[in-house]
Amino acid sequence: TRLRHRLTVENRVQLRWETFAFEAIDLIEESVNGPLTPSIAFNDLTSMSMRAFDVPVQDRVFEQSPAYPLADLDDPRLKTRWASSAVRAGMEIDAYLARARTVWGRREDVSAALARVAAAGRAAGAPMLSHDATQVETRAYYRALGATIAEFPMVMAPTQDARDAGDFIVFGAPNAVRGGSHIGSLGAGDMVEAGLCDALASDYFYPAMLAAIARLDQERRAPRHALWSLVSAGPAAASGLTDRGVIAPGKRADLVLVDWPDGGVPAVRLTLVAGRTAYWAEPAG
Image (cartoon, rainbow, N blue to C red; front, side, top):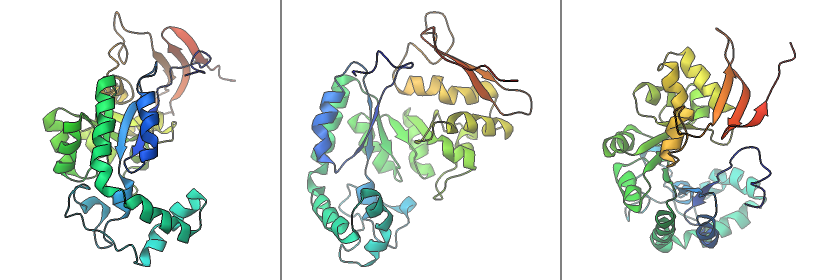
């Protein structure tokens, strides 16, 4: 908020909230009432990491279900499953396991926390997303909370349910660049071709967005103008930003000039934000 007048583009934050992270709720409620309304993504990687070892990640049931198949916290295989997470957290694995036990003890209170955060999001008009759905029940639950964006649905059933209900559907641009999901979920390119993708997200790697459009164009997944909408009109509509996303009278002049030679790699040359130059690149040759 303090930096926004010095930044060259409009930066809106996505609050990718892990639903067991109750410590973040006060900050979420403060953030949604700021000058640039953030989006809220409901993540439950905690339950995903606690699923039984014989359940593939794409087959897991709705995380809030009492029938959710759980791994035993004393199962030594958890050390292997969580080893890389412990490293990223800068913790020894035994300390990480102890912390996981504490956090998992919050499970009965997660639904109330979800309701509280969703209420704050609805009151502020914040776009809300559910993440990695594998069941129609999962998508329906989050839709009822006001999360009308399905982010990275893993299998076809919740994806089709989202389309039938009029929800927005988001897949990852890196998925499209690679030519498929790295964990065996739905392929972004296939979903674009099937008309089941409204937006491509950078998924932490911003260059993937332009690279994804280039690959999907090369593969003839859809006409180029339709592909471009996946990083322009689609995200704007999903985010409720009705003043941008398309080139039309009365809209903000948010424009990107792309140098895209036939058979070559596209490159951004100019970016305008509300008609103001935010980026300008002059090739050396």
